[in-house]
Length: 74
Image 1: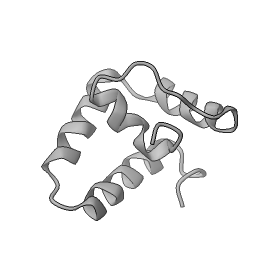
Image 2: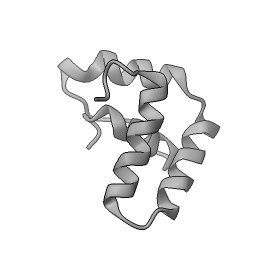
Image 3: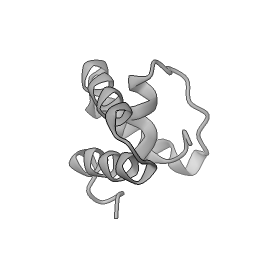
């Protein structure tokens, strides 16, 4: 999960500060981490926890990640 850019803000917002990432994904994950504040990530995590289905959560996380890195999320 930590290798997928769409989950980065969720994991940060949930308090994780160390992620295990494949070398290929490091630049994308770093860009996301550098582009959001902990408060923003916490807000994303709180909103994701309010959603009812996994599909809703995934769509929401894709939308939030697309704001930062439109080239990564299709």
